[in-house]
Length: 93
Image 1 (cartoon, one colour):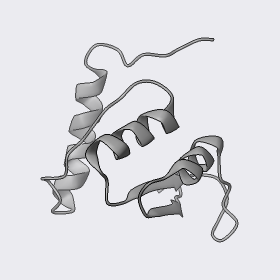
Image 2 (image 1 turned 180 degrees about the vertical axis):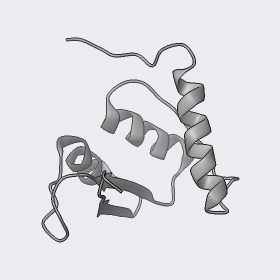
Image 3 (image 1 turned 60 degrees about the vertical axis):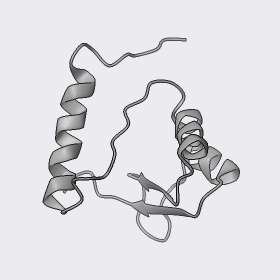
């Protein structure tokens, strides 16, 4: 099994990009967490640890209402402790 790690400075780069989006949406105080590992496990660990009010995930495949639910989204939905919302996104926008 091959594991890709965020290179040196990668987490800082991603955090900067996310912070710019949050600032533009007047949500600059929203905490940002960058984690490595199994996607669904890291999401669920953080949700349990921080007592999340809601988990939001996006799907880049298909159009509403027929967008595809991938394995990470399926795992989170099945094991979720908070209200859940998912939306299809257009990666070309």
